[in-house]
Image 1 (cartoon, rainbow, N blue to C red):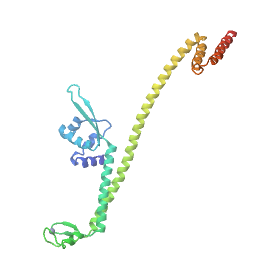
Image 2: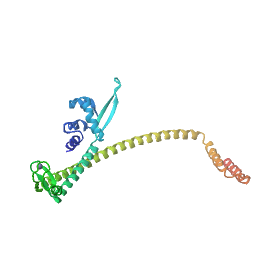
Image 3: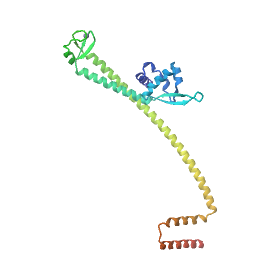
Length: 260
Ligand SMILES: [Zn+2]
């Protein structure tokens, strides 16, 4: 069903004769344009013209790679399924709207025809022409809309049915795209986790080394800490009286250490 819809899209955008390109473009990876041209049995310029037409509608994506020997770029192409389905959906909506307008018109207005020229006009216009054909002078005859209305309604049903099927394909494709995105996100998360984990381990190794080093010179570390505390407090207490108790606490601490 999806392939059929994609072919319909290419038929609308380029023409029926180009629809086979879908078989080559509906892939996971981008396809070399020279391979496309070879498989379609077209020149590279013909192939590119088709691809550019589809690209103008944003329904294909491309990547380019530089040929190291020749120095030119080769393009690789892939159809954008979701965008193509949405394009088809819009096209169907337009057609449905047009046909609904026509049905409404047939149901509410009366039409006349010239059987010789097969010209059809509204009753209003027929009246202003005295029911006489401008081309051949024949008399217009009333047209029975029953048959044409039946055909229009049948076509409308088919279009609406197609719209439902396209909507279904769109939801399937959206899920695929969503799953693809999640896979990429999960992959990135896993890599980030790995990086975090290795960094954590590295830090742990450094910490362990520092701890070991600190274990050998245990007496120095508490002294450092008390100095830091002093530095922080100093700017707050500028007055001489504030400085005095500090020196006392230091003395007390040093006394306490002496007792141990
Ligand atoms: Zn006529």
